[in-house]
Image (cartoon, rainbow, N blue to C red):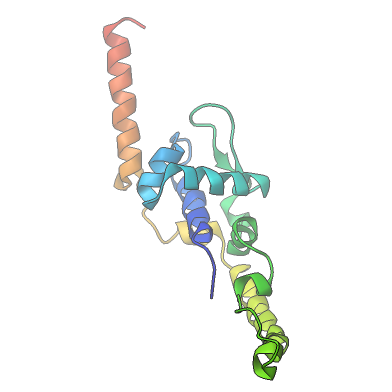
Length: 165
């Protein structure tokens, strides 16, 4: 089955902003947490923004969940980040018209693929970002990107204090 990693990257982004709210996490820092390039994070964030699952403002510390974590389902994330039909999830090879099996297999399999896709969406509609967040530590200090943000903030405050700003 083909579901791109943008789905899980989207879940990670939303859970991170839910757990580390008001921490000013950047796409670069999220990329380090996820293990991918910041450009991929920004691409997925743009999709989440368009779907209303994330709200991004100008500057640091402006990105927040678009609605409460309890109201964002994994189905919402899948639809925001991936294709929306069974045909897009269950890719098939190009048909060879001379072979009846190859030519008609898609027609035979499509209703089964659609049923499986519908069942997957139904299951994902019962799991929220809040459910995902509840499986992880609530202590922000356990998250390296939060600790780094705090250290950066402390350094900045120290420099400003030394220069009287």
